[in-house]
Length: 423
Image (cartoon, rainbow, N blue to C red):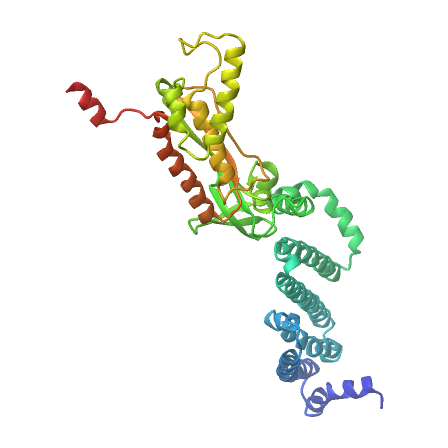
């Protein structure tokens, strides 16, 4: 006897027995269906549990013997569990024609339901492989700063879209390409419904291809109050951990549509910029006399400069018979100019300043706040805490040095200053 004949007899013996006992054909068919369906489902459930336990246990033992962590991520993503469901449901699908041989309507319905579940199961299996691959690649140094979440989400979306098309084709017996043609006519509605997803999808591709943002980058986006490190990039959002440990969630397409600052260039360069301004009182700027210059020569950093500079100035004035009874005649040194040179020399000799990058002290256009003297340099250490200490060390020294050049910082009067004037 052939296998189909054996299965057919197995699933009809209850019906044949009931007919022999005098039951009506309708009653016999219904009882036969109920008993066969219950027994088959119980058999499938038992087989599914046995296979699941066997496959999961075997997979765990296998992963413990390997050196790679990829199989560990597969186990965490339920890959063995999903795989164990395949055989029982394929068996159930093969038995459906025999269970519902007297009920063609129910047979077609259960065939479609089983096909749909198998498609979903296969999508789950592939999705678990994709997620495991993503987590595995995150452990690799080369992929640590790549937006793997966006990549995996894009692939999973296409996977579910393909699975949905297969399910639709199964339910309607319609060709997939005909469905896609119909879908094109409703594209405007689809775009409206999935606007954020589509924008995020396009933005994720642009961000990845143009290498605009990576995991770990320090970015600043004032519109959303984001100022910190990127900790996650997925299809629709970018998560930024601010320096106060709060989390800001930004739509991915905002990185394309809005302006933001990425500090990666600074962190990959040779230094972090120091740009601070000292506001000096304009009335404290003066020409230096011979006695002033001799006094300032006690400052070792600028002593050689003062000697050479004053020698050049004296030669210039002597050759042109300049009347130096009035300081404004001819060439002269000023306390501000000497202090500016002192700032340059101090930066040049500071061990924490990168000498290969731009370094200067410059005077900006005067304002009502005084004469701005800008310190511009780059610290070799780019770590935030160390950078702030270096910057503070430089500014504190310069603040304390100003008085040695008979200069004064400009600052607005306080209440105590006004009270002293009244007295």
